[in-house]
Length: 174
Image (cartoon, rainbow, N blue to C red):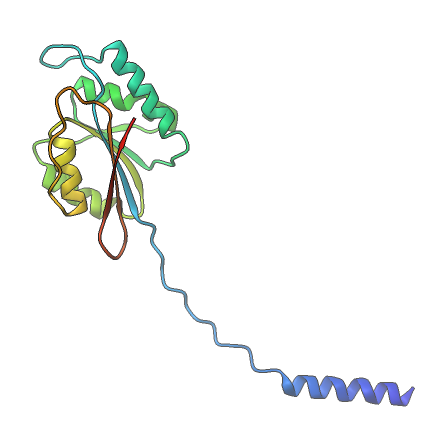
């Protein structure tokens, strides 16, 4: 019995002496997710000064909401025109988000606002054939995106702005 006790005692002492001290805790650097911005032009519209969407346009607005179904959006922005508001509406309803307005005549300021206030967030911006490519360039830093053709409603620009390094832009069709 004594031998067993002595053996256990020696094993515990030797094991305790062989263990290295616990490492000092290292503070992990803060990791911020990239900002992701989905930018689309409004869907197909009727004729007129501030028209509503056509039946095809309403279907495209619904398709946008379905496309973004699995995306966790933090905010949705649109110009104050009926065609852009109606394009954003199905996605806003599905996400239980309010559509926030922005001024398409102040795109540089809006791009800076998005970068400052929505870092690490995912947002949708609905604009126009000329403002959407311009805003895309202001966000990704290229300023090199050509306006969309007036008859083309299928573009979806996706800009990812990491915390470090260059932004990446993808042009998708839906």
